Image (cartoon, rainbow, N blue to C red; front, side, top):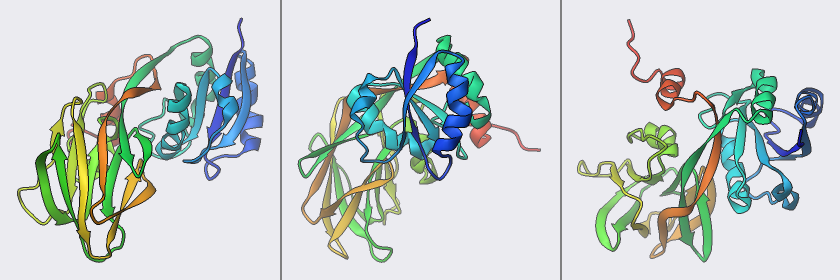
Length: 277
């Protein structure tokens, strides 16, 4: 049997190297899976030897998966998530399924969902988003004034807390909490969700993947806003500056169990569509 190579990215607040060595390494070796390294997941981590592995194993919650996305995209590697957190929308296995995970990896009993990514350009830097990009005010007081255009056609112009540009994968995250729709992760679309807009005519809007969006900062009480990619602040945005967002040609492959059902996941994690009596 060929030895599969995996690298582990872990959340140090959820687990540690000792747990990986004592619990996971032994189980994986029983199924001819070699753990080449264990690295703390962070938004800026770059591990060159990661490209020599077959899979990225992520130990943590959804946030840990998101912090591993840039490297997975750079090396075109699939992510297999093992949930050590709470909700675990992006993970395939629970903490109690380490042996099951090893067996599924070894026996190729996994399916891989191809997830759409957003690609954002600003200040000469490119970022990839699995969940969402949002522009928001940088302090609790005041508002920001922004304009959004779609292929140079105006969409929104308002004062408020900001705006979320969500992928279908991210539609069950921040976008859902802000009043957006839930989108099936298999489709390719962008969802725009204004945050606390000062206007009753500002409602979420869904666009197809073919066009480009621009978000322009008109002004702000404190002269700047923040740009967040998958929950991490990556830049400030000053008056007159813009962020350009589009659906990326790159995608991310995310592991799922063979009998994965998105509707079942919604019911299990969010009690979606369930009758309460």
